[in-house]
Structure formats: C-alpha cells, structure tokens
Image 1 (cartoon, rainbow, N blue to C red):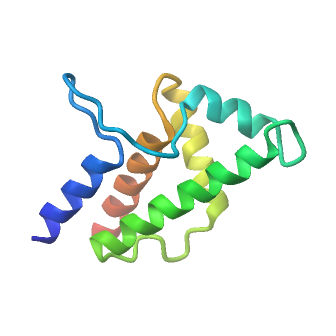
Image 2 (image 1 turned 135 degrees about the vertical axis):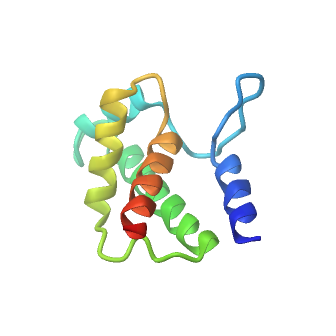
Length: 113
C-alpha cells in the first residue's frame, strides 16, 4: 500500500507520460531555474529564487512524509539546491519537479545500501 501511495505522489508531482503531462503547481523550467539561481539573493529574481527554493524544500519534505521515510535526515537545503542545479545543468529542457524526483531517488537508493 505504501508503494502505491508513493507512486501516486510521484505521478502528482510531475511524472509525465508521452501522451499526457501532469499539471504541477509551483515548479519552473530548468532553464529559468538556472537564470534565477545565477541572479543571486539580491538580483532581479531574488523573491522568485527564495520562493522556488522553499517550494523544493516543501516538495521533498512532503515526499518524505508521504513515503514515511527519513531520507532527508542530515540533508541541508543547500544540498537540495545544488542537486537541482546539477540536474538542470544536464537536463535544461526539464523542470525542477523532475530534478527533485531524481534527488529523491538518489537518496532512497543510498538509504537502501
């Protein structure tokens, strides 16, 4: 049952089939994420940067609660943002929901070892 619930959550946050994309509220494209992050905390996108960083923390925290796993134990927000930076640099046509999902998957894999 927990596995099914996690799959439903992941579908909700933006996994898309080739036929239909799932609507996700709050995420942004990787190309815009890069632009916002490069603007820094005092740049023209400062408010948007802070908002999107909070969105990522909230999404990953929600995934931890939903999956009932403590995969964020010891993970600092800056690490989350760096992982999104890395994913987006490799996948500029993707989005921050997909980046957070990949980070979640990597932390889950580490916790199983």
